[in-house]
Image 1 (cartoon, rainbow, N blue to C red):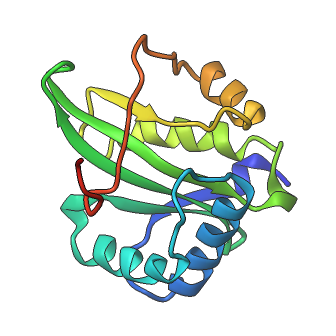
Image 2: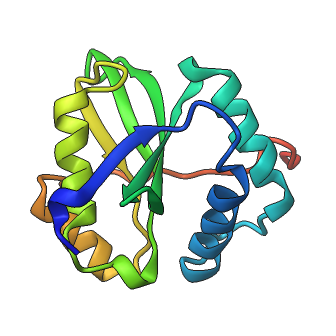
Length: 158
């Protein structure tokens, strides 16, 4: 694969919905989550993002028109950073296309396209995904000195 043949485009309709949902399922099977995910919600998440572009973007990674991966981008305002942080909520590259520079090219795309005009980029990486962490650190991401905790909104506080 010639890395110059990779293109990035924002998903603006539901033509690729099942392909993206399948990649989401594969990502979450490979990279375990602390929460039991309901994979059936992925289709409605895609519909929501496509219908509400201010809420985020799904960027498709293509080679010769074929989808090879995606990223789910979510903007949020940060008082600490004084502007919008663009959070890479999910990033997936098809296993047969990994280790060929697609991820690095995606981060170049983010720098050039500047979706949501961020002042900073953020992302999370699971402790077991050392290969992804090496990529993220190589393109300038650093670990902050605090831990982000999460809990489902529907669980009760005792």
